[in-house]
Image (cartoon, rainbow, N blue to C red; front, side, top):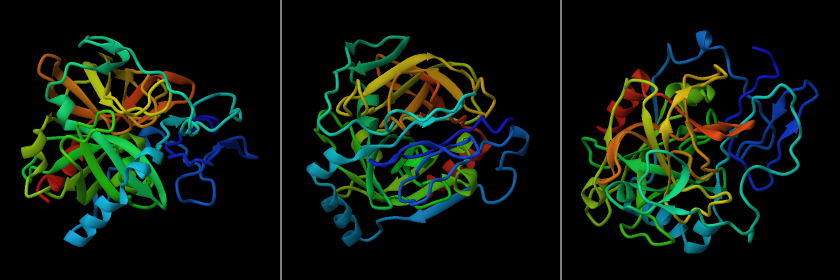
Length: 348
């Protein structure tokens, strides 16, 4: 691997700009960090995860007072101002300084409404209008990282505690950096409507390789939520199945709430098509043809998905895009480490 092949898993601040360092590698600012940082992906043979703790966890809003603080924090104005976490990494032979930030659209910038579409077996990004279970179990996530408010996507999944959602690791913890604060899940979000209310985080979990080295092959997070008005999340909206060690290359549906144009974060969007291996051999992830933009991070990927009922089995989540291929979304393969993460989180 040459030094010019660099993968960045970074969340962009409103003022975060990518730059080129004197050594010729790219640098990007992570949320809450004053200095720029670069993480070069190591060859797969030396990828972390073979040792150390497989699961890292963090206590969130446990007390009634903490839960109320989080709910009070997310006013409609704050939700509207929250930034989408950047999807883009960099894999390119010639590193160039971009003309503008790649994070969120400028305040007031117009966003085209995506075309509505019925359930299809192939699309790179259409509005989901069919309803079904997926429209209830998929939701927006609102979180704060080092004082900056962000949005992601997530899904309710089957669990022993009946309170579990799966999302991307970078929507829970900034790699080796800070854990998210003010974390709340809004299932069934649609054009500002919150039909099932907000569920605050009780405990957060990420895969060990994500916490130790921001390894994109394990960009997976799971969050156990507090009950809302005495009801578990699964009782309020239902849940999707989740599986590990599934066959690769299967037809996949991906869902989320992209914010950057041509989307605006107000509608559930989906992509559908076959997945493929990472052609750059930088991760063990699979790629889905998908035009969804920042804000869709953490949204669920389904195999065995039934468009007529909105039911499927979650086998990955939206994680990142390469900056020279905005047509493909990559998601981590749910293998043994993800299975260990789930086993811990679902019993918390």
